[in-house]
Image (tube, helix red, strand yellow):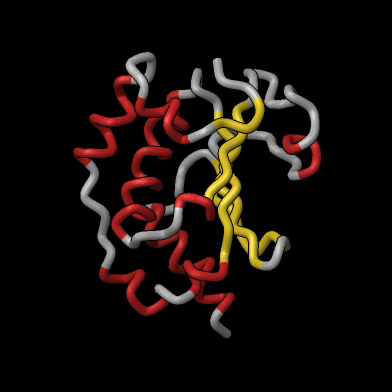
Length: 137
């Protein structure tokens, strides 16, 4: 179980074999994101997840496939691992009121502008598109 700030490279390690297979298999619909592409340059992502969580294992590779396809710089994404209580390590889970994982938080100048909790409403691409539309108006 990974706890606290985590480097993305840990997800590609042999102990998490599903990450790479889900990542490779996922074919994101990037066309809808072209209209909001510039928003990706200004935002940062904070992902609170659990390596033990099936939703995290499903959604995180999809998210990374999208941002890698759009060439979002790696330093724009921070990963924070939590335990099953979603309260440890202390700090980020309390600050951002984390109840379910994964939680993908979109930050603009340090202020939360949207989040995807556990599973997207439709797809990650569509949910991001809707969050970014609010930034562009």
